[in-house]
Image (cartoon, rainbow, N blue to C red):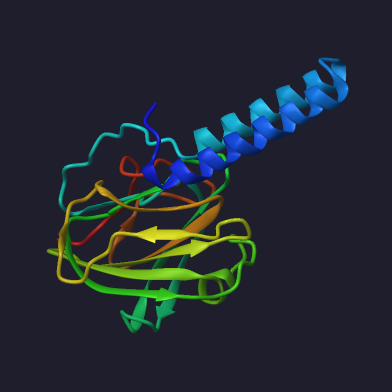
Amino acid sequence: MKVHKEGYNIIAVAFIIASAVVLGCYYLLGWGVFTQIICFAALVIFAFVVRFFRVPKRTHVVDKDLVVAPCDGKVVLIQEVEENEYLKEKCLQVSIFMSVFNVHVNYWPIDGNVTYYKYHPGKYMLAFLPKASELNEHTSVAVRSTYGDVFFKQIAGTFARRIVCHANPGADVVKSDECGIIKFGSRIDMYLPLDAVIKVKLGDTVRGSETVIAELNK
């Protein structure tokens, strides 16, 4: 299993803490039942931290007019909205919530050129709440494709305290390549043209870089 480099420091700290707790229990209490339980719990937590930063192999959707999921998770919102930060027009919003059990690597949803990037400091409300889109810490990124603009936000959650984004305005990006990672539970909001044909429904579980979210009008 490949581990994301953004997790190296956190994994190292988790290993040191788990080891210290187990050794402390061993020296104070010996290798009794309580110490064995603590050891097992520490191993489970450490394994969870390592697994969180896993980077799976994913297939790529080739069709240029198809928008793919930028992350793993569950579709929690599909609606027509007025987007006022970048697009400044009505569009279709599709939101995907990532639990702590999902892969948290993020992927470019379409081929194109990065035309906009902005980091927004903010709060750490639960990511699935509607207000989190505007009030939580988040990044905003726009990609201009042959078929129109795709705008999306990486939104931090209650436990997600670091968003990594590789957006560089002016750079060309390739669909399904990694565009960043959000640590420990979060959400991504996508804003698509009104005439896009949405290919998912509420409650669907999606896989980053593989699940088709929408087909853009040719």
